[in-house]
Length: 348
Length: 212
Image 1: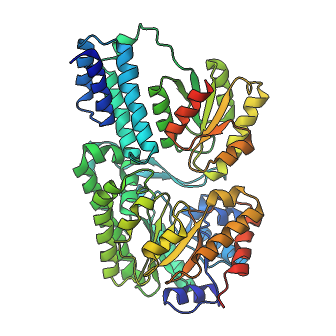
Image 2 (image 1 turned 180 degrees about the horizontal axis):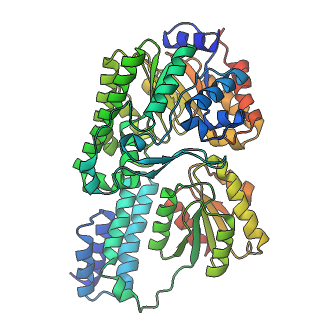
Image 3 (image 1 turned 90 degrees about the vertical axis):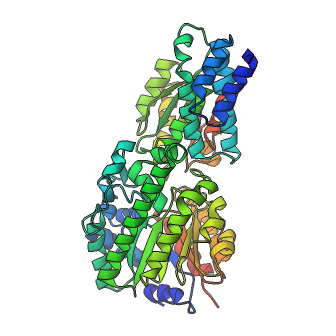
């Protein structure tokens, strides 16, 4: 099977030759082809080429995608800095659209065709369309987007002190994400569309399940319902980090038919299957720190463990890293993931 | 309300994250005759410690920890003028930094907040800090502990460099080095020649108390 055939079969609940492998490798791909790390987040053509060439080189199955964890900052008028040089891995917010409560009233929904990094994302999706793979829209979850609008420190403080403000910002984040999804559906249709939603900020290292239930769940649930209501078939939801206490709540959020639920290393694959596996594909949860720093044989063993834990999940499994593969990952360690897939990922 | 009850009330205001009530309760304690140092140590700081314990046990989350920091600040307002001329014996100086190349400072700030509340003098160098600055700060402030934070995996290089520079400057024997942050582990701490790894802000406090 080609990568595209393999992923399509998985999404259509058909038989596969082997477990697909999504390495979530943005900065790593840029470095792999000699581009600056920042280009993978800010230059659509270089980003697409770097990821596609790295995919071809290693034989993994994740089609190029375009996005970062600071989604929402520039889309609401703030400023993002892309990594310069190779020592910093990810884009960062340098000016939040909301810095104090008085800025809240100035917040407006911008036209998604012109908001922040979305014009570049559109350019990227046009390349995805012409190359024949999945077309992806990458956005933050409602709470992550809200945190990128207000700064997570403010958001956390306001949960206790200004809860109505937090509700307002989260709703605005949801409205924006839906407007972006509508635009992608209008331009690209739904046949090959995969909406990727990354939600690291709702992790339990930051908020309690009670806070999640009040400030995240209703908005995330409605947003997914509305996106799926546009005839989008699949949402890839990256439930990043420590989210164990949120799992019963996340399980109430529809992901598609099937959706893909991507787990951090803190959530076991067994728990992922328990909460989501009946209806959704489980993806995860290779420890990214280990991939970058451990010896090759340890990386191989960790990948083997993940594959064996997830391979027979009821709706399918993708070997995926727990978050973005660090750009400093030794190429031989990355190769170990491919080797593990080839040694243990094939179905009879 | 006697002095002891009033200080206990301060502690409860912190633990219950009562930002509107803490300043008033500190004033009540002072009016009841409490020594400002006792209000600080047995009220505000002890309350912060309990908040830290609750964070460590999973009962409290980052939101509560941040709010507790604000409660502490509010509680210090009536105390600070009274503490200026007192001879509070600090527990020692900790140089705190997020290493070069990493701009994440939320975790580091929490560690700083909890260490200050526990009675340490904290020299917070900020984020994206070059190894040389850390070395200079250790020498200048006669620090007993260096606490280094790192969120991004590639910054192991910077962490290693900081440890090496401290060693090359001949300061390694006078300081304990502890590390923390999302991508750090006890194994990494050992591998880099650090003294310990702290899982969270409260663990950092316990480690520092162990080392002084």
